[in-house]
Figure 1: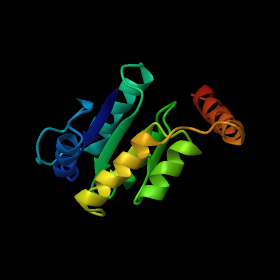
Figure 2: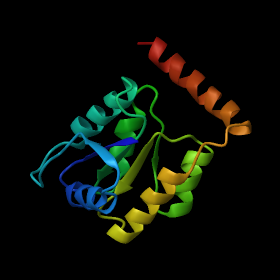
Figure 3: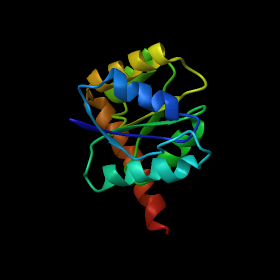
Figure 4: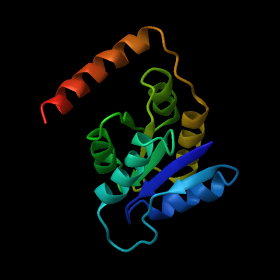
Length: 149
């Protein structure tokens, strides 16, 4: 399974640590590739476009707090990004919300916690059932938003 990953300069170090820690996985790295100041929307959008076009199924986005990365990702059609700061949130974001993007805040959580969050998120699966009905409602809202454009 290929996982997308992207960060800004504030998340670069954690992005690289995650890639090393989960070395058995194949990562599609949308950047950034240094700690030079940059704008997270550029890299988050690149990752999300790869989900939209089917090149990858899911991804991890990282900035200083995770807030900007998650807001950016959720502006894009078909993206369900969840900003998670613990393992339970990560698992539930997948089980109940079928999150296809995990957002992390590199300046908020340490590496070891980030690894546990990523592991829990990667190993969770969507439960469907009553949760599918709720996602259908979210998709209807999204559809109406994009049709107005």
